[in-house]
Length: 141
Image (cartoon, rainbow, N blue to C red; front, side, top):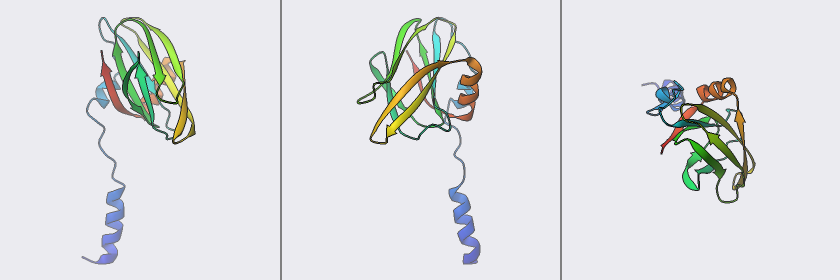
């Protein structure tokens, strides 16, 4: 094979998009769960790309990244979503069974020391942001 043809093929192969993770399509149907509340923690595609570990009700559940979202299925009641380590961001949310909530996480700071802000957002913004992103964690309690 001609080496001048091989280089563009190698570069093009490096740009191939990975398939979405298992569960991504199902999570993007935005369905309620009987006797549980569903919370989407979303990060916008234009947010900074700091990894941001989070916890739910004091339990570490994973790390968010730019253009990703988490789908949390939790019992009804009061829940706290918060950053970990030096990240003091948090939100307390009263979640009712049969409902879906959207929490936008915004990060700032430095890569080794970042902070988060969590805001409850409306359904239209939440869905559109999740549709642009990729599921990175599904947490069911």
